[in-house]
Every structure is written in C-alpha cells, then in structure tokens.
Amino acid sequence: LTGLMLNSYFPQGEGVTGTDQIKRTLTFLTNNDGAASVFYQNIAYHLSIGSVAKLAAMLLKCLSAAIDSDVKESAAATSKAKKNKKSKKRGRDEGSADEDEDGTVGEKKLNASNTKLMAAIAETICCLWESIGPSLREADNEECNTFLTEAFSGSVLTDALSHFEQKHVEAVDNEDKAQQMECQRIGSAILRCAGNLTPAVVDGLSSRISTMEVTENTNLTAHMALLCVWGMEEDVAKSIGKSIKRGLMEGTDEDAMMEEPRRQSTKRNRKGAAAADEEDALPFANMPASLAIASLSNILRGVDPSCVTARDAILDSVSACSALEGALDAATSTAERMLTSSDYDPDSDKVALVLACCEEFGKLALHKEGRKDVQSSQLSSPIQTLLYWVSSRVIPAVVKHSGNNTDADENDDGTSPLGDLNLSRISLSSNVSAPGPMSPAEPAKRRSNRGKTPKKQEPDSTFDSDVNKSVSFDIDNSTNVPVAICLIKSALVVFAEWVSVCGIGSKKIAAKASKWANVLQMECVEVDIRKELIPAFARLSFQLARKGGDSKLGAAVVSACLDHLDEGCEQETRVKKMAIKINKLAENGSMAPIEMQ
Figure: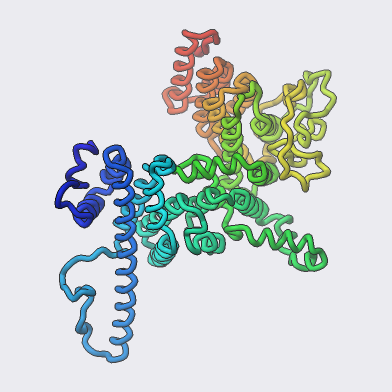
C-alpha cells in the first residue's frame, strides 16, 4: 500500500521540489495522521536512505518555523494587549493578527499552536530516523549520517522541547487534556531523536533534563530513556529507587526520621557530605514515586525503541539492577505492615505503589533471566523468593492457622536458603512477623547493605517444606484481607508471565500455587475473593499446563471454588473454559485431565 500511495503523498521526479513534497506531507498529516503514521514508517522500503534523511530534515525545519511563528504571534498579541490597555482605543488596531509577516492576508501559516499537527510532524521525524537508523551505521552511509547529525545538532531540539514543555504547562492550567497529551507526544519524539545523537552535539539538553522540575503531570519515560541511552543508566536507576523508597516510607516513622536536616551530620563528615551531594545531583530528584514506577514499567515493557535500548543498558549494569532491586524489595516491608492494618484502602495510592513494585520486580527478574546466554533449569533467585514470600507471609496472613505443623520436614533445621527469610522466625499466627526482602540479601543484622546484588543461591529441601500444612480456611479478622488479595493477584500475574516467557520452574510454581488456591473457598464481606482471583488463577493454570505440562493448579482451582459459584455466573464460566482448554492440552500430552464435578 505504501508503494501504491508513494506518488500521491511523496511525489518524485522532474519538476518536483522539496516544497511540493513537504506540502503533500503536511496535507497527509493534517487529514489523516493515523494512515500517515503507517505510511512514513514504511517509506524507507521504497526510498533511498538519502531521501528519507532529507525528508526528516525538512520536517524539522517546518517544526522550527512553526515554533518561530508561534513565538512571534504570542509576542505580537502581548504587545497589542498592552497597547490596547494603555490607549483604551477601539478593539481592532491596524496590522491585525490576520496579516502575516510578509504583509499577505488570509494565507494560513504553519503555527506551533496547532499541537495536534506538531505531534504528527515530530513523530514522523522520529519514525523516519529510526527506520534508517541501522543503515546509517554502515560505512557507505556515513555521509547521510553526518547530514542528519548536522541538521539536528546545536540547540534546535532543546529549544523545541522547551517550547512545548511551556505549552504543556499552559494546557495544564487550562485543563486541556488533549493538548497536554499532544505536547507529551511531541516531547517524547524530540527526545527519541536526541537519542540518535551524542550529548555533546545537542546543546544544553542533558543539563536541562537533569535539572527539570517534575510534577505529577510530567511524563518522564522518554527523559529517562534518553539518559540511559546516553550512558547515565546508573543515575536513572538510583533516582527511581530513591523515589520509590521515599514513596513507600511516606507517613511512617522512618519518613519522619528522613525529614531531619541531613546537613547537620554531613558538615562533620566529609564523606557523608559528598554522598549527600551525589544524591542531590541525581536527575529527577523530587519525582513522585508514582511517576518513577510508571516510567520504570514503560522502560521494562519497551514501549518504543529508545525504551528497549534503555532497558538493555539497565540490565547490563549490575549497579543499576541492584539499585532497582533494592527499592522494589522494600515494598515487601510496606506490604506486611499493610496486611496487619485496616488503615489501608486497597484503592489507595500506597497500595497501588506496592502492587506495582511487585509486578516490576517480576518483570525485572524475567528480563534478567531472558538475557542469560545459558538458561538455567532452576527458578531465578528473585522469582523463587517472591514465590516463597507469598507462601510464607501473604497466605498465612489471610487465613487462620491451627498452630499444628506436625507434617513439617523432619530434617528442617530452621534455616533458609533465602537468608533473611528464615523459617524459624516466621510466625504462623495471624500477626505477621518482621518483614523479609523479596530478594536474598545479607543477614538481617546488616540490612543497610540490602542494595547489594547477592550471589544466586540454589534451593535446598527447606524451600520445599510447607509452613502451613494444617490450615483452617477462615478469614483472619485482624488482617487487611483486601490488600492481601491484591498482593496474591499481583503475584499470580507475575508468575503467569514468568511461565509464559521462561517456562522455568513450572512444577515448583504449580506445587506452591495449588495450596494458594484454597483461598478461593473463603468468604469475605469486604471483597469478592473469587471474582478478584479466579481470572489470575485461570491464567496461571493455563500457562502451567501449556508450558510445563502440569494440570495440578487447574485441578486445585476447580476443586476449591466450583461448589461455591452460582451456576451460570461469569466466574463459573471462566473456570470451566480454563478446564476445557487444559483438558484439550492433556489429550496430546502426559498430564492428567481435570475432572469436572
């Protein structure tokens, strides 16, 4: 289709000028930006690299001209308003706004106030450059690469970003959601373009990003991705980690301690002062935790090519991964405080942050595992620890225990391969004991070093010993059950993704999760447990059957909840569909089919 449309929207040949091509391009972007986006993403397959580079440079000139026009128009409007206020003369003066700088009247000019068109232009520039990016690195195309570098170097990108950041502020003040989104799209495209250059040739952009003011309306994904592309992944990871930890500590005693003036101690300690200065120099120092975790999520998901590059940079850095793991790990401590308190609403920002940390912890572990040259047959330490944490902390926090643990492994000496999560210190009562980390760390007395990346420890028999062999499945009224259900749901999603992508440790996950399925028998006034958990259980059950050849969890879900569901309800239908899909897989495999009651 792109080839068929090429002559209409990007004419070539004798007598066709660059102006003609730009007019057609702008008309296409104005009339149908969606179709235009697909067209320009594929145009590199039909044009030479030089032609694509030239089109990108011409569109950049259009963007800059539109900004200049907007600035002049705004200045003229301001000057006119002042004159009108002073003279109090008639409202329409000579030299109206309909007259352009050349004195012609009625001709519509390109103006940056049309943020919808500006967003389309900026994203087209970006996709054109990215479509030829790999080819530009070839020696034969060095001339084209130099041409683009010269066209985009200097302050042109920094000035454009500054202009649309200001327009974003105005849109926020005017509560114009559409314009806010369009300005964010423009900024992201500009930053992605900057990622194709070195920091030295883009005047002032690095310092502007590092010192920018951050509000709740700021989208930081592209800014963080650019800094990672430019080799600042460790600073970005530390800044994200710091913001997440600060968000987790808000409203706690630890938060009050953190608010004490830090300089009093650092004045007497040069090393402490240097560390404090280094911390203050981190980019986005005051960003809210919600923005930090959202940006990390986008980077790990690889929402655009720059995020994929940023993700690779972070995963290649041991220090960056450690900073992120240490922050995400801290969410378990907050989660366990939530489990024993009714003060936390499941819909609160703090609970949302904890759940997001849990999910990003799983994503980070998944990507780290995927980058290994040789795949292990064992669960990675972070995923193994998350599995253990849900089994030993979250599930026991929800249900009442009989206090009888006679079935425990006789050889269990009370030690755990997970270090700080020592089985001998986990209470089987409803009150959760001291919090444990989500990644194996140093012994408990050295918690200040939790940010260090531990060496992977292989599981031993103590990991498989069940801490809740004898359980009476009744609600523990001392526990914040809605929060616990949210944590279980989040963990199920993480494990489903892990099994789907890695396929490692399916048997162990199935064995643990099958015990969790018993919570589907429980009744709770505050939350519909089956409605919340059945979709996540069904998803994990199917992935375990598909990738691991294990129907154990699916059978446990059917056994636990089918008798408790109303006939024909949505949850019953979902469970039965899951069982049918798994039984179809069982016909061609060695796993046992699920027996429907």
